[in-house]
Image 1: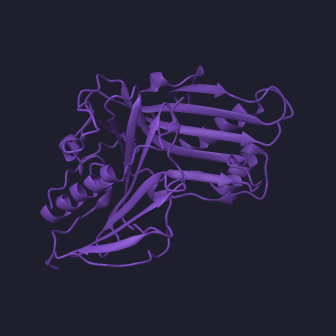
Image 2: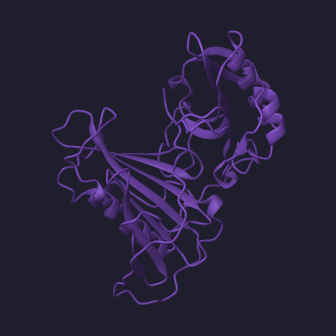
Image 3: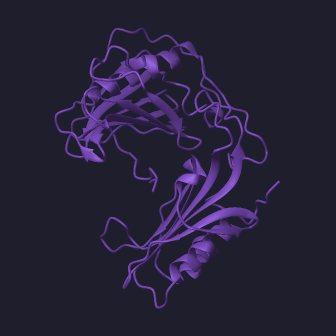
Length: 327
């Protein structure tokens, strides 16, 4: 089951500051960040001098602002360095305790670590805040690799982003009207409507509308608090499990992953658009398997009867797509 990258929000001011020798000359304007190809900053050749990384590098969009890069490690079966980036109009500097800032002309860079040093992070932004948040980590089948340093991969990615900003060679995508790009997903359903659908009160809106990452959560101190979330993914719908269904005319998969007793949990993936050819730099020959998906998840602290979580998730997904219809 694929997971959603919804945990990468940074704020605050970086500590420490130094500058390099680049002149403060102006760079070309970045323009409308929402039209940028999320994978248009970094190419596989960015990492050619990393001797531990193999040639079969994959670069794939995760949604309209995120890009996932997979760098296979030589001599380690299923070992990799994962690099992922998030575009944003208001990119904040890293707040980690070891964060250090540098300036390359008008481009501001902050580097640091997180997850007890397991992740190497960075932000690259212009003065108006438009920029990229970046993370890199090493793992093997999901297990963290403590003997592999992902920071060199992060540094190469930062250099590639800076080079793109300096040249102004931005790659853009003209999304068609039937795309979820630009759809006010978080505004399609209110907090009160979510609370009614999931039969919970005192939820908090923790959404990031610019990233189409909408979350309404309770507070129970756990890593998976009760509530609901909806977000957009770009992926292959065949990767997802669940019973076939239709929501607002869109084909869906409803997966009840509730515990046999106690809490309820349901995931729904709804295919809203299939791409015969992805218009971005990568995944250009998708063969129709790459699609825009609405991902809906509901977590209930308890459910009084079987299927309650999935009925709630169906209600949330239906409301989230209430202003969309299949072409």
